[in-house]
Structures are given as C-alpha cells and as structure tokens.
View 1: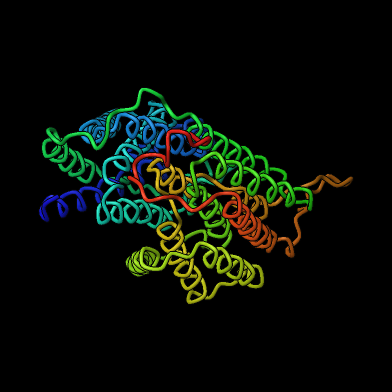
View 2: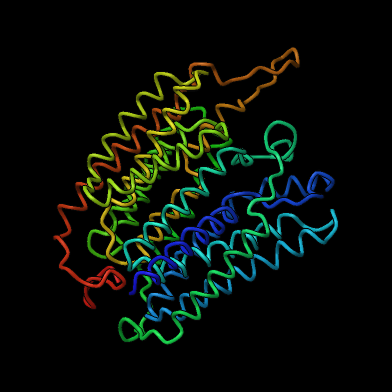
Length: 442
C-alpha cells in the first residue's frame, strides 16, 4: 500500500477500535439515565457482563467469517455497518425517554462493538501499523473505562449511582460519527482491492468453538465466584477453570496461535487483581504511552514466557500489598500491567487473524479473579442467633484474588510450555489464513 493509505488505515483503526471498545466494555448511558427506574438500572448492571461476553464472542465469529471470505471490501463494509448500528442506537437513545430499556440498548451497543472489532481486525491485522493501531485503540478504551468503574460482576443499581459510577456518555456521538466517516472512506478506498486469496467454502469451526468455550466458561466462573468466592475450593475452581479453558482454547487454534490466548488469560487474571477499582484521570495519558511502549517492545522482542513470569511476580507483589492507598503504588502497578499487556499481546505468536482477535477479546470478558475480587470487597454476611449480621469474609482474605492470579499465571506458563512441546514451529505463510488445509485445528 502507498504511504497515505497506510496512514489513513492506521488512524481509522485507532479511532474505530477505541469507539468499538468503549461501546463493548462500558454500560450505555444518556442524559436521562439517572431518571430511569431502579429496575432498569438493576437489569443494566446485571446484564452488563453478559453483554460484554456476547460482544467478545461476536467479534471472534465475525473475524472468522470475514477472514474465510478473504475479501477486504467485505471486512470494511461490515465495519461500516456495525458503526452505523452503533450510531443509530446512540441517536435513538439520546432522543427517547427514561422508560426505554437500557439493558436492551446496551446489548445492541456491545454486539455492534463486537462486530466492528472483529471485522476491523480482519481488515487491518495483515498490516503492521494498522494492526498496532487496532490493538492500541482497544487498550485505550479499557484504560478509559478504568477512570469510571463499571458495575461489578454481581452488580446492582447501587453500582450505577452515587460514587460507584458516573454518567460519561462514552463513546460520544461525535466520536462515533467520526468513526463512521473514516470507515466509509475505508470502504471506498478498498472497494476494488482484489481478495488476498480465493474464498474458502469451508467455515473453520475449531476457532469458533475455541472462543465459545473460553468466553462462556470464563463468564460463568466469574459470576459464580462473585457469590461463592470465600473458600479454598473456590480458589482451586478459579485456577482450574481458567487454566483448563485457556489450554483447551489454545489447542483448538492452529499451530502456536494458542500462545496469545494463554498470555491473554494470564493478563486478564493479574490485571483484574492488580489494577485499582478507579484510576485518576491524569494517569490515562501516561498509561497509554506506557502501553504503546510495551507494544513496540513486544513487536521487537516478543517473549511470552518472560511475560508470564513477570505477571506471576507482579501478582505476588499485589498479594503482599492488597490494601495499599499510596497513589504512586496504585498508578505504578497499573503502569506495569499496561506495559505487560502491550508487550504480551504483541509478542505472542498468532498467524491466523481470528486467533489474534480472540486473544485480544479475552481481556474484555470478566475473569474469575474479578469475580473473587468483587466477592471479597462486598463480603458475605451471615445471620447470628441474635439476628445480627456478621461478615464472614475476613480482612486477610483481601489478598486471595492476587494469589489466585499468581496461580493462574503459573498455570498458563505451564500450558505455554506444553503447547510449544506439542506444536512444531509454524512455517512462514499469510497471517490471515491457517497454517495448512490439513491442520487438525481448522
């Protein structure tokens, strides 16, 4: 491609991925949100983790479908269509009344965001700079979401009012409209581009099955642990489900593409235990710069094994300081996680585009560690014989999520070693297609 085309696609990928990531990860809100009923807020808080999981799964499926079509035009057209749905949903939301269903509009938002991320990934992940911008845009959206904490895994309407969450109208309509315009330019610029390869008539089901197993089990584990996360058996269950589903999903992907999934599972676990419930707004530009530096380092010297070891060390550090209130330690830990996320996602092997999409989408899905952290912060109360309520979660249990994340990171490390021993090094090939037609993972 010419230099101006690369620059245009890079800017489009950055803006569009940020918009879609915000739509996927954050609860939808409008000027009338605070005036709606408690039932609507409860439904929004309760359905948010499911909406995020649905959007992440849709992103994976769309990436597989568009990659199978092998049409850049179809990829950009799908991206444009998803953004139009997003824009219509927000325009309708701003002009409707407080009696409208927030949970329904939020599901539309998340699914449209997933469609955009999957199709855009299929369009740009073949090229270095646009692929870099796609990943960075997604991580920026997650960092922006950290400024205003979203409802908990087992949340209620209390999470959507008061000090827990404040309406931000993210992503704003002007930003969605800008993304629509840029995607439209992308459709026009690529309408005559020939397909990179002949379209396949066979739909690879193994990557889709990999995404379904990973996303659904992760969500179910997080929701269960948000209510029953106070025992050693719960910790064992969290570790077992996270590592086992990560390894199964990794083995279903072609070649060594599973490296990015195992790395993402560990990143999600340690990040859920380490990053503060709410980050100061001034830290976001710093964290974005650190993330970009980590991504650059990962593209130059990718080392997934080293990343997993570093994640385990960070988890131990978090477990030893679970209740710190020192700003430098909170922001410093977030900076280390941000660097490791960028380094890990860009350094892990993934030759098949949907594998990269799945590995990136994993960090959106609420993890088992996040469910445990929610349980510990909220507590579980028992009624004594004198009818008084007693919290059954001790202060010492606050480090349990961090220790759980350490075990998950070590489990993913073992899974990565096992994957490398059982899969030979892949031969050079087009990054948008599987290794070979005979690969059993396809």
